[in-house]
Image (cartoon, rainbow, N blue to C red; front, side, top):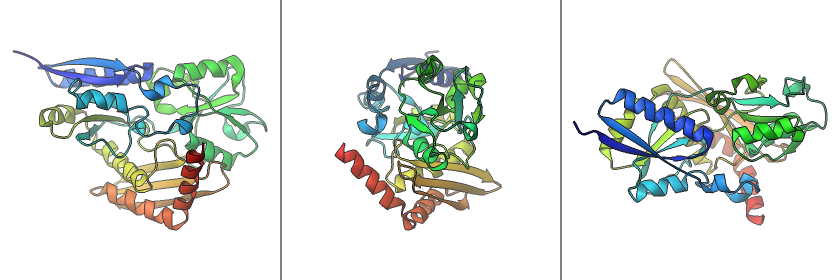
Length: 316
């Protein structure tokens, strides 16, 4: 029997390849007559490592090159860390499925020589590395006595920079650390009271052509209903605020019985203003829950904070 051939477009970073290989294995395990290959490439976000992410702009920073491969017919699907996938996709493409989510929390990783294990215990002037404006804004709000320094590169590169003494600690996604086998380097899972995580963090998003029913059916075996409901609510919240993955917008979602609760925040980059609220609704309509929360925060001044941030970006 001739096997159906499916080609995956992926970033070629170590984490991206670990995630993509997992998708390949799951698809081949669940569909016997499927042969999966991988086309790995570098994206703009992978190539520009000497400029802060927020200064580059984030519309498709880690996704455009992969999407182009699908649109010209050189790939059938693209595997993304869902937090990197813009909420508005190019015409002809769709978010085909969302996989079971790993821990979406942020994590504290400390220098090996450092005996301090919690953010709350860091002495004044400690150097904290992060490339995320979302983390930066929330940590400045909670810990104005700390010093923050931008850090770029993949997870392994960042840990090497940390251990070389450039930083006292760095903040990374717990999911990435666990997938790469660095779980032992996690010294603290940062609680929601300190830092809400990024939209979609911890989940993988599988993108494909909107009209390719065969591919949509194939990748449906990877769909996790609970993770999907939570992430759709989060992405709706972000879309309604017209934010991107490099804007200080954080979330946390949970499902209990037939209800989804979505906690969200918007903060100024200097950490002096932070607005937080919650929305609850039916799991049947997760995107409505996200929209409702966005409107709540807008009424409290979130749109003013975000417009000021966008203006700062334009000036730079």
